[in-house]
Length: 237
Ligand SMILES: C[S@@+](CC[C@H](N)C(=O)[O-])C[C@H]1O[C@@H](n2cnc3c(N)ncnc32)[C@H](O)[C@@H]1O
Image (tube, rainbow, N blue to C red):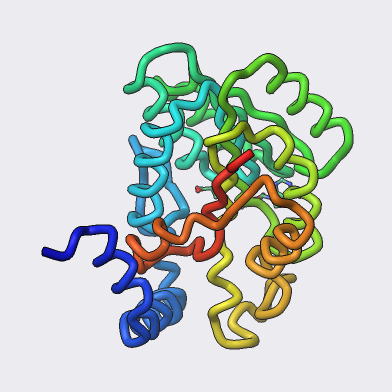
């Protein structure tokens, strides 16, 4: 019998499925599919498949700190906090966003999961914000980082340089929206990112100079439909 790992590898290498996954992303993008979901009442701008992958990672790693750049409505912060709540212990979530809208802040602050969440307002690459994040991460044993703010190559590369040292061995650095690279050129006319200038190109450049991280391809091969192909980076040393 063929075991699951081999099946996962084979489905990941299946060109027809790969094409179908890209088609799914491209076609659903027109309808803002990623805006259709919520977690415990807060809108979460993610694919359900990636949320499942994050659940598996959080359970496996059991981080005592999850750092997320890009809060938006806060659904991903609430998701991470709810996983830490289920695990038990004192795990905390730290979110950073350049613009925390008042109505989002109000809803987040009264959410039952907010007890595990701290939010910082400012650019994720601003020196003062980075200093506060580093202070927060001091003495934490297991740190997971998710990057989901501005998706241009230059910005993500900076976030990778600033936040990757905080990730602990065995944990993950998850870079969302790498799938922009797999979409046709000009798919985001009103955005400062495109094919050739996005989180995936930043990850590729980052990995040329950093041997602490490896792409965990089993995750993308398992999901098939993901906004983060080549974006699940495992910290191996
Ligand atoms: C894709 S949304 C985040 C979605 C959220 N992680 C979720 O899963 O629901 C991107 C967010 O990044 C924020 N952002 C843009 N530029 C930023 C920067 N330089 N630093 C921090 N946040 C930024 C935007 O304000 C926006 O709220």
